[in-house]
Image 1 (cartoon, rainbow, N blue to C red):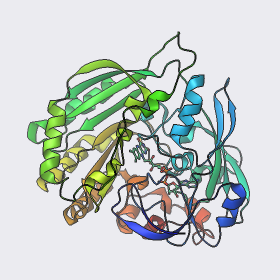
Image 2: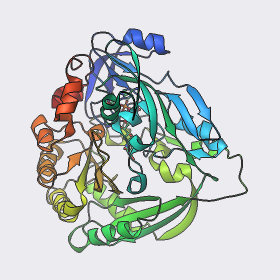
Image 3: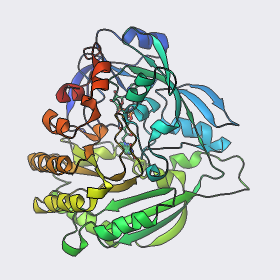
Image 4: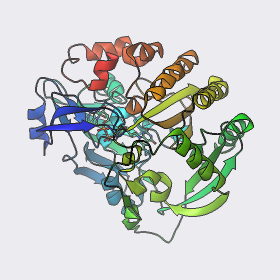
Length: 435
Ligand SMILES: Cc1cc2nc3c(=O)[nH]c(=O)nc-3n(C[C@H](O)[C@H](O)[C@H](O)COP(=O)(O)OP(=O)(O)OC[C@H]3O[C@@H](n4cnc5c(N)ncnc54)[C@H](O)[C@@H]3O)c2cc1C
């Protein structure tokens, strides 16, 4: 079947041959000359598709085994976080690492090696994986773990689908006794206070801050910081999951392209900062972890031209000065973002993973030529400060800038793995970056 598809940013799309295999046999048959796996298409750019053969895994969504006592689960790679939560929460388990949306598959979580609001405590998803099975170029199903097929294990995690198609994954879960979350929320006046409060909140399991990219001068880098922990509730033994569907607004049509411009985003930023008051309260898993899911198809707000997401990480040592430089570049060029998030990352996850000990920032910008030229300038700040960008958000970096970031995608080990499969597993993104 031919279909026009894009990533979540909707800023670039392709007319692709797409298929939706229903089981392992059908999946193997679809791996012809060349292909790329796709989950729920929540990566923002062009990593989840290629013109000739894009294979969507969402029908392979079975739970293979669930040890409810030990909290170990094995799943097919196309299952979504929402489907997993519906099955594990009632038994008192939660994902040890979760991204900010429930509409993401396990395959996508491994391929991007996702991080959550607890990276400062436990690192990325990589560290929770016991084993996964991947289909290689000869259609063999290969088990990979820290002891078996070690290289393939290490470089598939964070490998953006470029080592084969992940069929299943076994990993550890996190014990919880309630679906409730205790949250504290408070304003930070500028970037120094934001960073100080991240340090002061390091003992909390979850930390994240929304950043006001429109703030200038003494208020540059002001933010709203959220820190949270799971509530301990001895009375609850069977937790219901209907709260996962709470209050969803659905957008069915694109908004006009002009709606999200520097003027309106500036106003939204000011309103959000000024009307967010310091507060401690009880909330639930859905409200804390998956806020953006409450507006279904929120990506339509940016109009038909879509938007450009940009996420980078900077080593802790260089981070404050570099973040100030970046926020000043945005301000000078009047390029603002409303969905702007800062998180503290606790360790170097290694291999192809994005995580290094430092600070990560993510922005969503309206799609126009000014944004592209500003992001080229910001790339230079990241290169100079030995940072990196997150490929699952990327749709535009040039090969030369990505190469200068000294990404392990160009190291000897990964080049060796890619030799012989470069023409078999590739995406529009891997072609652009020559990886
Ligand atoms: C609202 C929102 C919030 C987010 N928050 C976070 C966050 O907090 N932290 C974070 O780390 N990320 C976050 N992300 C990014 C998201 O976690 C990643 O982009 C993830 O990879 C998307 O999964 P997917 O199933 O949609 O995969 P797709 O977007 O379809 O694919 C992403 C990549 O995974 C590969 N892939 C998918 N399935 C397989 C498979 N079975 N085998 C091999 N390769 C495969 C694809 O080839 C592609 O390279 C967020 C995204 C959104 C939309």
